Image 1: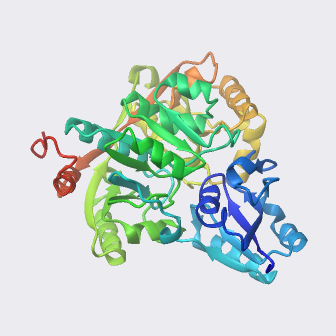
Image 2: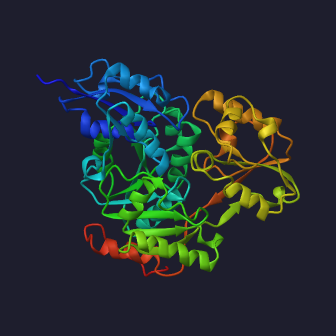
Image 3: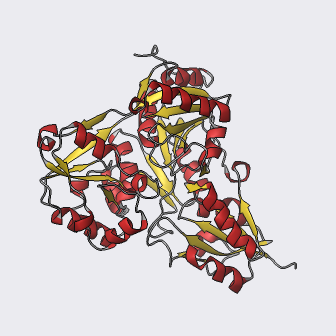
Length: 453
């Protein structure tokens, strides 16, 4: 028997497992000797269990820190290293490649053809060129539009398996109680809870072949809600990609954000109400230069505060969506904008009050502005978040995380929630594109209301 090719998969608890399942799990010529972990704290030190890895891996596969890459490659005489996570600057991708090539190994990227599943029902997928562009509000808008037409959608979420991988092989969420039973982190609840509030079932987990099969049995159509700026795990029949007007110039600077922009059927210029017309026109030209065949539509995300009067003239601590502010690269987000619009007297910088692991977060991401990222992957992070909020010299907390923060983090300070949903702006309208798509799928079409109804 020829010696198996030894492989390391660089990951962040998501794309890495999917690529393994799709390409390497049943390949007797390949041996994945390790996964590595990045971006998400606390996900190394585990193993990908043998029950998921298959009979070629009776002892499972270790998950180690990415910082150990060189040591792993030397110890295991690695032949190939596969990059399998997202939202990386192109230059950082090549730094990783250089580390690998210097050891004599190959550096690989697996593409859509080898890693996309085919679903037995139609698929609409939503991705973005960066984390935090507004994918999930767009998916919620689509789910409402579909139900209004008699189409039953189910959401498939990009994976977030940060706990017991065996228990998270196939996850189905239909109620808030399901989130509690699954011991979901803040980051998971941020993604799942708003969909459940809209009445949409959500699937996620580790083994997407099984997930797609299960979800398709109860759906007329699957909605892929992407993570970071990754491309979908299943082949879309209609592919929507968001570009963030608040981060112009980043459309082609990140992996695989440039890839998804080039793949898109429809490009949404999100948050365009925050951009002047000249800049908006320039962004549109950039998009069409990269993807001249795409339809370009405009989208806005109007902000709403649960209690604006409590914010006016107050000293405010702002809590923002975690990934958008950390590896998403934004200094501030929707909470900061909403607090200023409501007339906050002062935005309190959380740094002097940061507790525990949050001090490490601020040190690791020095670009963060005077806001507190809602990092809550592990119990100690939740405890640090609560301690920071309680210690802060503020009168009120403005929370722009999509989850009900007060139900998870026990604090005495009043919390005002910020909500934001996708809305169309200008022509052509996304509703018209959706109607046209449904007309090409007569098995789905019950009734198409007139555009704008």
